[in-house]
Length: 114
Image (tube, rainbow, N blue to C red; front, side):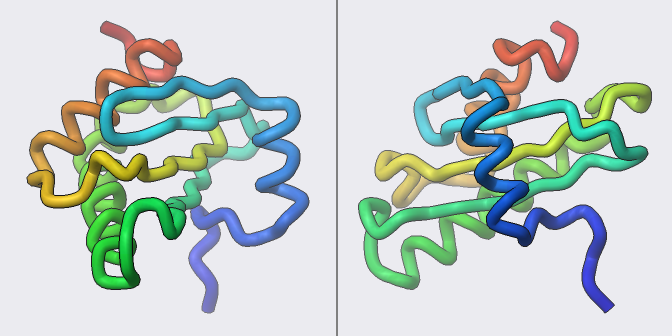
């Protein structure tokens, strides 16, 4: 059974890119858009600029773990679609650094209150 909180369809990605907003930070770029559902949906991307497949998979794992820690801080009444993209500066960083970067991006986006 597929997880319902994961973005999969190309149309979902396109609508977030076209109608959503974005915020960049040191290690990640956050695209977000309210989705009107009762849960958040996420997509994690790492392009070839990040490095080979080992580095890209590590970057995705770091972003997923960072998001998992921050999911508790997200407001319960507002639900969003998130696309979190790794920058090439993420290579060799620790989970705490990536989490701090993602938290900063979410605060600047207004998703998490300061």
